[in-house]
Amino acid sequence: MTLTAFIESIGLIGPGLTDWPHAADVLAGCAPYAQARTELPPPAGLPSAERRRTGPVVRVALAAGHEAVAASGRDAATLATVFSASGGDGQNCHAICETLAGDDRQLSPTRFHNSVHNAPAGYWSIATRAMATSNVLCAHDGSFAAGLLESLCQVVVDRVPTLLIAYDTDYPEPLRAVRPIGDAFGVGLVLAPDASERALARIDVQLTDAPATTLVHAELDALRAGNPAARVLPLLDALAARRSTRVVLDYLVDTRVQVDIAMPDTFAERA
Image (cartoon, rainbow, N blue to C red; front, side, top):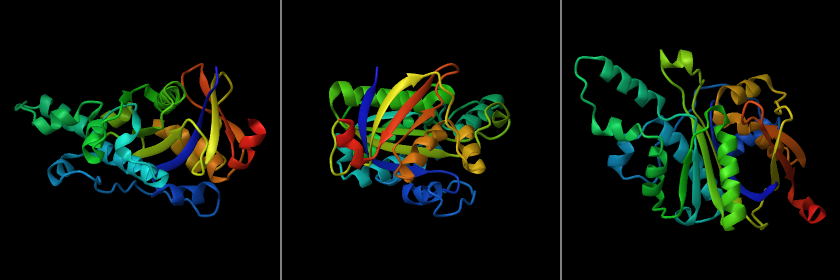
């Protein structure tokens, strides 16, 4: 079975990558890649009290989501959303573990509500006043592909534009030793059922057992392999080059996701 959608816009934030225009230049070879810690902006749209309570996972998710929505020109409140991450807030998880390992085991309510996997989705609904359908997924290292498939199902079956936000953040030691995610990375994609003047590309997606596509740039490929959300990078690499091609994204141990990418000038040819 093949699932088809049109990518209308992209949001991105990651190590040495400030936003999608900057990342596109890096991926296309128009700008050098300078590895640096991810700089997470304050979460836009939240009241000051909620803004102070947010951790890295909420900030990276909201940054990617807001950029993608702004670039699409759509109303965030009307978009169905899919949030996908292999874990939650690593810093918060570490703090909770430290508290539970100590003598005073009383957890703050903020620590508790930030520990749930769907916290970014909740903060997003507050920031955007979104009332549309929202799903939150986790599939370990296959979380980006799982989120993409879920988003495509909504686009194809319900015929509604959908915002996919995939993100993951790092853990402090000793958790880092068993879950070595290098740094925070987030990506947002607005996917639509029909072509429009906003469409950046058409994607036709199906499962495959072909090997995953890697990146020529060694540091960027290390980023791809080191953060589950960054498994999107081969797709973004093709979009940055405005190249119609096929890429394969990591998903499960013996199953991957094949993405056939068509640029706008080829839509008619492939119809």
